[in-house]
Every structure is written in structure tokens, then in C-alpha cells.
Image (cartoon, rainbow, N blue to C red; front, side, top):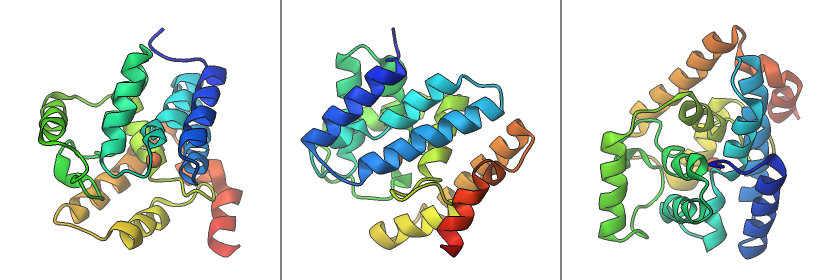
Length: 201
Ligand SMILES: [Fe+2]
């Protein structure tokens, strides 16, 4: 199988958290839940979306790293034969397929790793699961599901901005509109109470 079951995916995330405990696993659990809900609302495979959302950041098992978490996740999932997940480990951080879009620092990757990533992004053609996890990454704080705007500010406060930031914000808000259309409903409505709580407390 190119994809673990939901139970296997939860076990992998528990193991990853034991290697590098942190709020990133809470963020991952919310991303899995958001992905499943949105996928089911628009006729995609909810279990596949859940597993991909749950494991998109699994490379963080490898310690407190920056861009390198996408490489670590890719390698770990490739070793296990889960190619549907290894792909998501690479694509989730790039709503535009260009290395510059990454919000953090690429300096923890070797030049070979950066060349590999750059080549992958040049050739990749995103499907709706890539787009869905990119959106869910941008909908989930470690405390729960929020608006894209809240999350983009959260990332901006932690990492700052770069020359790609404006294009990234446009791309991410575009993903939200894309899934609104696909679902036939404003995606925020699927998490209305939770998003209201994140704003009003
Ligand atoms: Fe993430």
C-alpha cells in the first residue's frame, strides 16, 4: 500500500512525537481532522485525506529543524513504502511550486537536498490532495482550526516575511476559494463553532 491505514498513521505520529515532542503533533492532528471533513464535503476520499493531513509534518520527528523537515518526512515515508505520504511531505509547504515560498530558513538543508527539492518542484503537477493539505496546513494552529488569515499571521509572526510572501498569501486564499467551490459551501462553515471560538474565545 502506498498509504498507511488511519490506525497505522496515528501510531507513526505517536512515535514521531516520542522522538521530538512538541505542539507540531497537535497541529498535525487538527490538519488530519480538517482534511477529512473537507474531503468528505467535496467527494474526495476522507480516510486518505485524514492520513495525509496527519503525517504531512512527520519529518519533524527528526528534531527541531526548519525546511529540512520536508526532506526527513519524505525519506521516512519512502523507507516505509508510503509514497502517497512522502509526496505530501514535499508538497505541503509550497502552495506555489517554488523553493522561495517556504516561510522559514532553507539553511538546514545541504546543497544536494536543495537541488533535489528544486528539481521536484519544477516537475511536480499538484493534485487535489496536494492542494487540500496545503490548505489544511494553513487552517490549523496547534490549538485548533482557524481562518487562513489567523494562521498566516501566526506564521508571519514566527518566521517573518520574504519576497514571496504576498504571492503566497494570494495562493493560500485562492486554495480556500477553490475548496469553497468544490464543496459548494464556505469551508469555514464546516468548522463554524471552532473558528468562532478561536476568534472570540
Ligand atoms: Fe504543517
